[in-house]
Length: 353
Image (tube, rainbow, N blue to C red; front, top):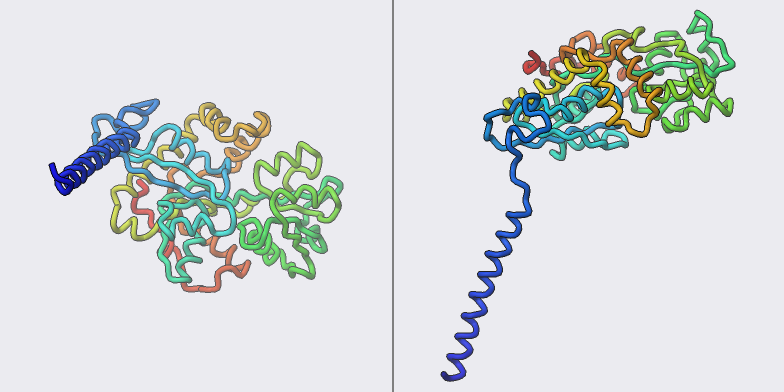
């Protein structure tokens, strides 16, 4: 065989070897990629509600600004596999509007937060809708430094005080600005705000740099146990009533283009809400799994307060009244200047049964 023939045969053998290698590599990748889980492969097949359904599981991500005990119905629905045909996970994205932006950029199916975020987005040309309610009360409390007595005239007590609160743009900050207006107090004159990171609030009062704090659970109960402040002298959940504080919000395109997925998701959240209503003990056990570093006493106190203050809307409905309260708060805080945006522009409850 001449040199040209030898070279041609060598090239042919190399090509065959390369094809065999590529085929083997594809087979290896396929073996490593997990196949869709069978419909009854969950820890509790009857809870999953997917028996006999061979449709591949669709994966959805929900972005949350913090990992909060208030969102427990969502965590229950995830852990109990209550989403038929869906695999849902929650991802914490802290910092400003990161959770909203995750949906706007298609990195997440939905985000948990107040529907006023949909109004902020609409003012900039984007279309988001709240589809199911979770936290239906303003999960915020006002507490006074332990050496102060607020008395019964709250407006009089608050005049001249310095309030430690989380940063501007967050709901606790918006609420204190709203309440200042309700009490006839002018900010930076009658009432001073000391805006700090949430974790720094206890130190502000301990060092006598603030008189009042705006807090949420579990910080509220922690501060009570440590003697930094007393029981709340102003209970926002009870005083402001129904308030769409945390809803699940998704793109309008998702409703238009994939209503079946939206319906399944909303139904799963509804089941989670009904579960926390009807199964308090087991809900507490799930809370312990979600918040393993919290002491049992603190966690139980936090969850019990949520039940007492009617924190959850068990039907999943988002009422016009609850949204109006939220919009009033952010408008009073100067965060939403467009007066034309209303309920129907930011809420769609067609999937709530």
